[in-house]
Amino acid sequence: MKMISYGDTERAYRLEKDSPTLQSIPPNFYAEAMELAGKPELSEHKNNILGLLSEIQEKRSRKILLHAMRSLKDEPPENATKQEADFYRKAVAILRENKESVFQYKPPEKKELDVAKTKIKILRPLPSILASDLKEYGPFSGSEIVDIPVDNAKILVAQGIAEEVSATSS
Image (cartoon, rainbow, N blue to C red; front, side, top):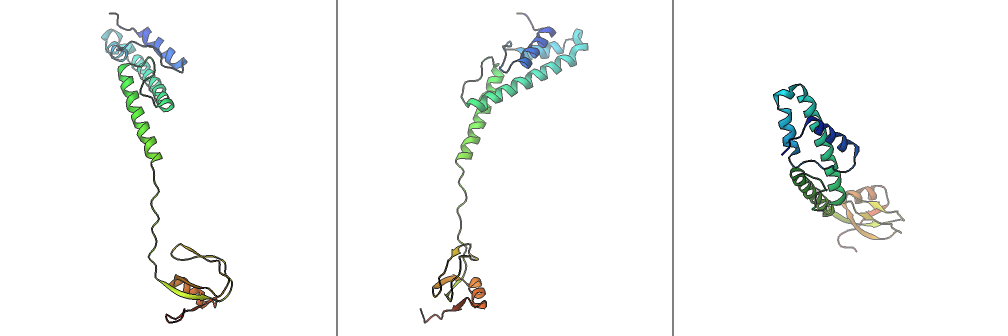
């Protein structure tokens, strides 16, 4: 079995760089390239080989992730190595999980504020108001008797817009 050469590594880099899809590489490409970089007779090229290998891996990973994001299918892209196919399947699983969690989001239920209320009689027309319990009351035409939060009732009475209703009258 022929081991890859420095030229094979450069060729793989150029092919990956120039193509939007994964290019065919030997199944043990990464391991053989690492072995090549470790050869004493190629020590002067070690950094170049490692740099090319890193660039190839980054470009291929980017293509694999884009493929995963586009398809979300279990089948890895053509020409993926075994390691890259595993990476692809894990990426798809994470992307699916994220998509499911987004679409299963349920906003928190609104809790009603427990606010003390009192009855008042509205004396004249009044537009809707947003009370301290975060509920809208009104609009009022005048002469209605309403149950609203105490602090809002006090303000309306103080402004002469409403009057307190005694507990015995209704």
